[in-house]
Image (tube, protein in one colour):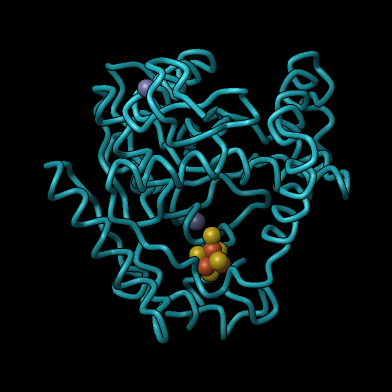
Length: 308
Ligand code: Q46
Ligand code: ZN
Ligand code: ZN
């Protein structure tokens, strides 16, 4: 297999794009693709200040690397969840996020959940009924809240996350399997700040395969945490990814076309905001100023108040 651009031996063959590239041309091609999608979906411009949510994994660190190479003003945000024991997931991922920021002379905001709110994510999860003992529901709620809070407080124009195509396709698969129209309305490359207290969110990697992101991180020499969070084991999300990978193996490009056909259907007005059966986030939390579905404190503030 030869590189399509230079004819040298290819390092990666992407059947889904009918494209094989050598290391050098792949490392050039991927950021070009990301730049195309940033423009296509009007995510941000060179004037915007971007906050990248960095977990220490391959996707978020590569996203930070790509935005930096493309010349954007991108700072990082690392949230210390306090998920340790065994593989020391949180401390190791924090070390790698800090290392990347220091090596590239980039600013990294670090928020420790336990220092700021009195308990780590597993501790909070152990005391609430949310998520039935699994910390993921508490974790997701807290991460969304903290990302939005830091982006607002520090005056960023947009929050960027490292969700790749496999993540987006798996979420879409779960939501269509159960026809959760409220979530389908909100899924997309850009989530507008259409409520007071919300920051605009974008996913610049939403059309890049997970395999391409892993290749980018390795070929670029980015030091990232290989292990997944120990709580991700056995999740529905991983199961859906496995199913979609089987489909992709038989039909290269299936994942991408699943996601893109969904975006096209949305563009044609298939999922209008009116289709959202969920109560709109019309109220503002008196404690944190973020939008919430019912009058009074938001779910995050209620949870944290209980801790206190
Ligand atoms: S939600 Fe659950 Fe993840 Fe939080 S507890 Fe780990 S697996 S990190 S994306
Ligand atoms: Zn080449
Ligand atoms: Zn609140």
